[in-house]
Length: 227
Image (tube, rainbow, N blue to C red):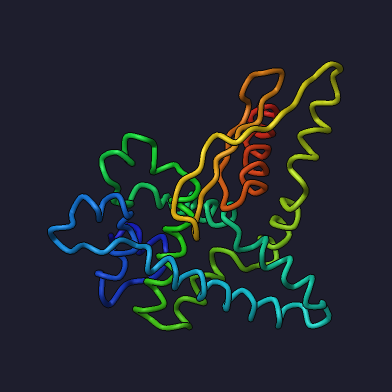
């Protein structure tokens, strides 16, 4: 815990908040007899805290931008991929508590699990230290000029970029297909894969089919552009 607190640059008054933020539902389900809480409630709260802090930041940072542009930038900053990148920087997967099945299935590296845990950690800091502490953490992780520029760059259509890369050679066939879906109706996670000439070159997840395809295209770009 202390190691993660150092990465967060925040020391909890009540470590139980952070502990709960790291409890994936699969782990909580395996420990029902102990009445262990999963991080889903914290994730719900963290999503709202993150949305408010980000909206407040953009409102003050860009006084001339219309509502539509502010909404677009906020969506990019708080999207699943962006939160996943924060989790990677924090090495959050190392600290997650997962059920045996999720552990065996590579849950520590799963985009949706890591993104959700990031929101849960934001909520844990908010409950422990208030909005100022949560805002400071979110600003350190997400909200600075360099980060915003990077996010705007990433907002380029990955599918279009992948198509342009593939078209540099003739007779290349690129196609997308859904690989599955999970979760309740109100919070589904979709999985997609992109195939190049019948071979899978990227897989991705998202809370919509379009988001999953974009994530798959991003993974394919990283794979194909690797030296």
